[in-house]
Image: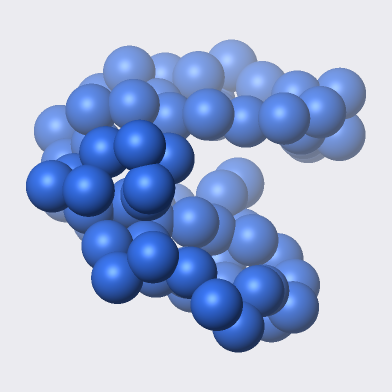
Length: 69
């Protein structure tokens, strides 16, 4: 995504601190649990992508509500 959209800011969130060491200049990562309250302001993200995550979420309704905020 960072290479394809070089003028965008790409933020990756993961429970694990294991991230690639070489990423485009507009990509950053931080460790967080997306099921906890989000520290970012509502409306900050234009696009949220989750891969194979909803099957492991304790409360999917709350998570989807946060995504739409």
